[in-house]
Image (cartoon, rainbow, N blue to C red; front, side, top):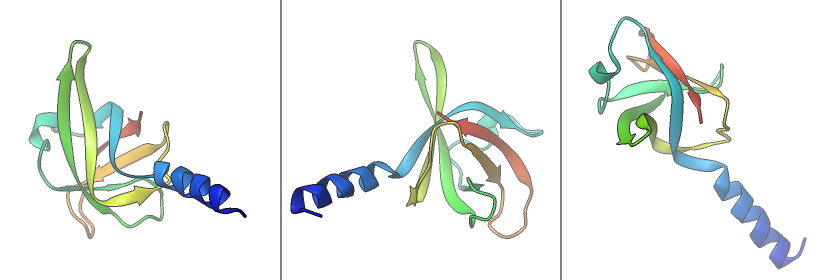
Amino acid sequence: MTVADAGEYQEKVEELVSKEIDLEQVNIIGNNIDDILEKDVYARIRYRQDKQKIKIVKKSDKSGDKFTAIFDKAQKGMAKGQSIVFYDKLDGGKCLGGAIIS
């Protein structure tokens, strides 16, 4: 691997690591989305992944309300179309709902 190849590889890896993801099809069980906005909740993207602390924020524009999940720590390998599930607690706790990564 050349130095140039290594640089390109590093750029691609950095594209896969992010603290923020846009959400679509947000569904909240028994609550209104406003009940959890800007509050610490926890999320899991993969079945065996440890729950991660996030905040869900609303970003409105002309096309309507958009939501973004902001993680405390950068996450690897999040891809469009994956599901994200929200929980109220790190250990145990109840499922608050979920969304699709857009």
